[in-house]
Image 1 (cartoon, rainbow, N blue to C red):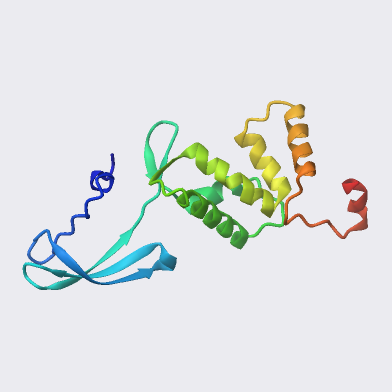
Image 2 (cartoon, helix red, strand yellow):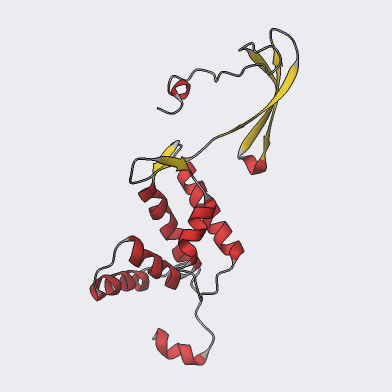
Amino acid sequence: MLFPHLAKKEKPLVICPFCRFDDSRVIDSRPTDEGNQIRRRRECTSCGRRFNTAESSILLVIKRSGATEPFSREKVISGVRKACQGRPVNDDDLALLAQRVEESLRLDGAAEVEAQEVGLALLAPLRELDEVAYLRYASVYRNFASLEDFEAEIALLRAEPSRNFKVPKDSRNQALIK
């Protein structure tokens, strides 16, 4: 296990940077970085000097090879950018998508998630963002092997339209929708 002290619910070991004593008391705690980090003001119980710590939770992704790496919003964005090529999706949309994916993964409270879970967590927000990009991404992610796979997914899209799907105003496209 990466952080054995967390499994036992022990308090994390914080060493004083001045005297190297391993006990301190928290004087003040404040959330920073949009709540992703906590800044704590501490006082050493041995020497009495004060110091700051910044604590953040790291979401680790377990890759198929078994290796782990920190979750990266940039990797989510780069992974979905090709599916969004030529679509009305901008960088802000992609950043928000990556944020939503990270938030949904963190809701489970797990410190580690499988790479497969990251891909699955991406599908619903991508579908809401752009159904064509969703279909492109899903076809690669789910290894569509035939035209029937595409037809089945399109049938699901038609049966349950996305909440954010916008009908084009161009009359030439009206015939395509019907």
